[in-house]
Length: 178
Image (cartoon, helix red, strand yellow):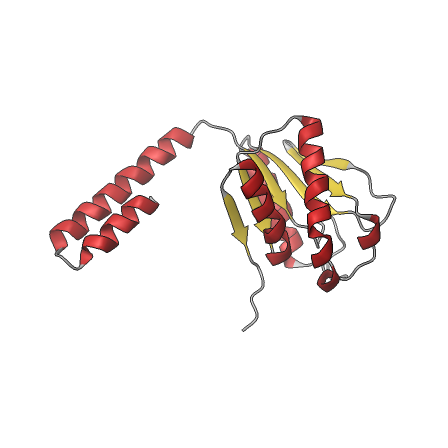
């Protein structure tokens, strides 16, 4: 679809005939992609590093984003996709992983130095979180098809995963300050 959009932008100035051809190509390309993925079940690495989908709402950094991550993962799992949600462990007693729903697991990444760190203090630990995520992936022998990051901190880890795994990276920012 991106190529189709590029074609339509490139020829838009030269006349509506080319613009319409670009739109037709874009639509055709999108339909081909949809049919190719229709029956394919994806393995998705979903990253929500600073806020757990199981966190108590209204405390610390848990709120609407936590609900969004949890419910999106449940719906994807219901549709047959396998989703692993990666979040930080905030205490030593956090279990390694939990089953949240059919095809959905919550995986705690343990970086002991960051257990009690505030969200704004997590940035220096992001490579450590990615190393633990990668260790999990290798141990489980999973090749993810897609990375979905939530919030900019998770996006940094998602970019590391994208570069290492050569997979698409989708990012939802949730909060943008102006």
